[in-house]
Image (cartoon, rainbow, N blue to C red; front, side, top):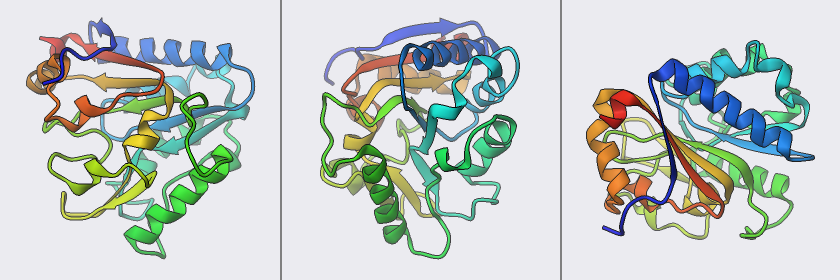
Length: 241
């Protein structure tokens, strides 16, 4: 236990209200910054409603699509058209509805190579975008990093007890054996290189694990993530209890 989570906490009445609040929040951050804006996306059901809203009026016309780049915090090692694919979910909810240049979309590769090679390829892509081999705390990789919270306390594909939790050199790693399918995940150094990192948490089934996260229970991988910038938590009333 390391003490209560140091995050700006906002409790919204329901998932719909939360999704709209997060859309306003991200639009405000994007328009406050000049030049390239980089977003790291989360999979799962909770952010999907936010993605759908961002791509629709009144939010769509206020967001700087042309200068925003989209990355993924983790991916299941399945084809991009598979129902389990995080890329597919985001494409259906957001990417196919917004005026985003194809060169601004950076999915994790999952076909034609193995998990370790895919992780290495995505790390190379992140480094190319960042323009350096090492992360500088004064120049975060991401402007916004959207995070989920699993019922076991995982975030991205950083699962309890997995060796990837100790990885401090690689930016991206394959995760084998934690779930039936292999995963590709950004590691703590890359996930933490964010001006704004935000947990999106909804549903009463998340209430017990959310309480542990707020207490700062560092047995949870999510509680051990400390971004270089500001940490936010958006939760609905059901998750907050």
